[in-house]
Image 1 (cartoon, rainbow, N blue to C red):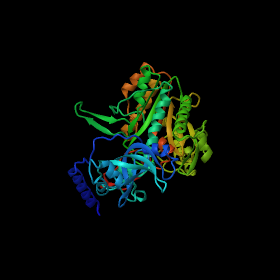
Image 2: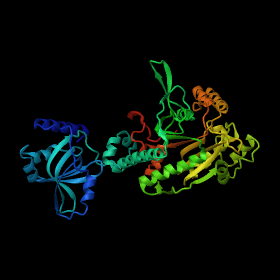
Image 3: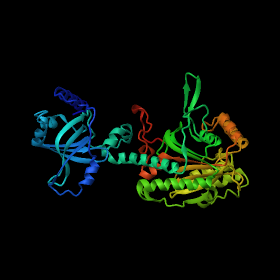
Image 4: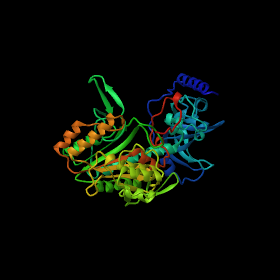
Length: 508
């Protein structure tokens, strides 16, 4: 049968249920247990024994087997599954006052995918299957569309993301991913709140997009007659709060960047940014280790994890190494020895660098070498520290190394997971850097920042020494749930309209 034929047949069953006086879309149901509770509580129940305990369960019918006067349904709820043992004589006895053909209706009017409530006792069948030995049942929701028969074998990955609700129904491991995601975010909040950090919400709609190098989404407010941007970071508003007297603040929320998509990029993603007055990037390294190791231990019960076949040891302390030293280690290039940009470019080309003709400074070239040659090799947790000032417009100058800033990025499995600065608090220096960014923006760089005059005004009132930290929640979830793609870690990733979907993972 085609899907259309199945839907028509099920609609007819809806009508039959209504004619029988049964509502196929019930209002509520009161369960006494989840299936996982029953499986755990009666794990040692011997074969063939029944427990004289009335239970009530509810869930989706995942499978049906009907044999004359017996039927066996697999019922799945949020926590797991259990068998329903349905016997005609027992159901007819308990439901005789409601409908003398209750078992017949059960066989004829239910389908896989329906949501059912059932009451009965607990019994382990002769074949050893723990079951609810059903006395009475209620159809709570009639499903009109069939569940896929071979969902696990589907090669259309985009369909799994597009119909995530079906993916969740038939793949318990996907539900586990999002259950762990919720535990991870809750654990991060708990860790920070226990250390006196306050979560304060900042605007999503902003008149100036700042706090990161990224192309923003642009929208329009009709009443105010002005263009606005969806935020590309929470940084500048959280820093305003530090100026205003808060000493420990954070926000965990959605960020929007009008950029490409890949296995590790989604235009709408979740990050947490944390700011602590009277701290620097060294304090933020300790905070980062604490957050991630605590959450990993709470959620997974271990700091020894496997990601896509790679063994990762999250045990602190994590390696701390400068970008200069890593580039020298992996390529032999010593950027401290180059006196001119041309000399650095020539050496970099000899080392196999590509696409560096337009790189304008030695600092940007150093970063280009790092991104092309080093990033993917950083499998174990590594703090890469002391970045070029040219690529870090919001970070404080390094206290002992001219041309660098006090910044780190955390890399795990070759992927940036966190970013942190000793925050720039000098309003004059900050203005010069933002104006340089604005010049790049005016010259056509769509990712360069503009000048946020209100933020600069806030800095002129004085911001204390501050350490800032950003962690990509989606990438952290990927790591701790072994997801190969960011789309596996986001419940509803952004997709093209179905007719124009060309590839589930087009690169950016």
